Image (cartoon, rainbow, N blue to C red):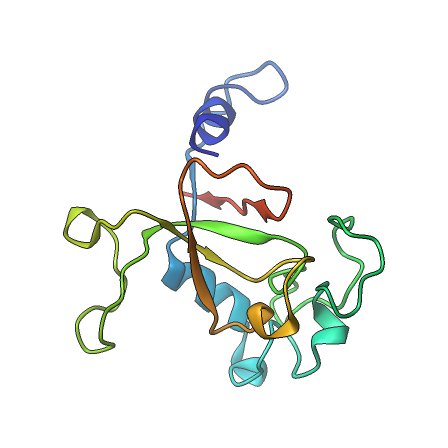
Amino acid sequence: AKDFIDKLGMKVAGQLSGEKFRLPTAAEWDCAARGGKKSQHTIYAGSNDANEVAWNNTNLTKQSTVPMCQKKPNELGLYDMSGNVNEWCLDWRKKYLPEEVIDPVGKAFLGSKRVVRGGSWNGPASSCRVSFRDGRDPDTRSSDVGIRLVLS
């Protein structure tokens, strides 16, 4: 993912993009997934019903990713924040108490796994909850992990 992001920042369609991209922090991902004021308390990104917004192993017969935008978006118009693929975040995964940190990024929070958010097509609906946070080895190559970029 990092190599792709670096290359994307250098060239887009053969031209220098001049843009800087990065992975979102887990806190940024969470804020985007929760959406606007009306949907702040939904279980999934845009709904309390996983079937409306999330592809997971309970509602998908095909065992692979699904093209984007097939389910309902959240209040901000963002699709597939819940389900389809887990999304890499910038943060390193570490267990911490809520009062310790707000957005755990940086050397002080190094762990052995990067945070992934959103759940995927091969996991249960419970892993598609906005509040669910998991971790993966940074070298993981899997069909159920993808990226959502932040333009910084």
